[in-house]
Length: 116
Image 1: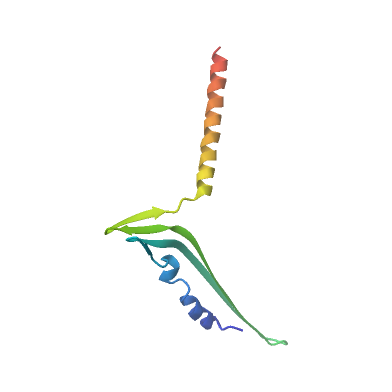
Image 2: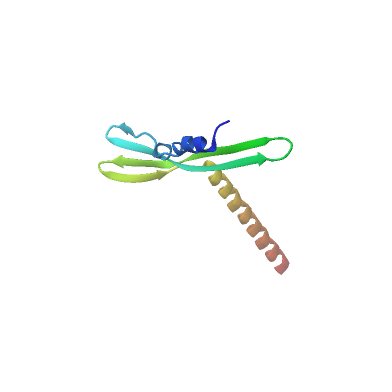
């Protein structure tokens, strides 16, 4: 079994700067540097059993996740941040706006119908 210390040593190299900032791409005088959001977590364990049956235990785990955040665009000495557009958030936001508009419209129609 892998020792917890050995696992932690291997995990140290995982969330490096190359995970956040990708390799720069240079074309026609424009440099693009991709950027990601990186999150990680880990856990460990231990164990021992005393009594009739000798026991022992070790445990551990490490997880790392990354999602695109955007790119830095460097052109003629100017740096510009271009965030990633999350289409799913746009769709959900549009749906919420439509539902609120429909509920508001329904309320206005009901209030006008009562006045007549």
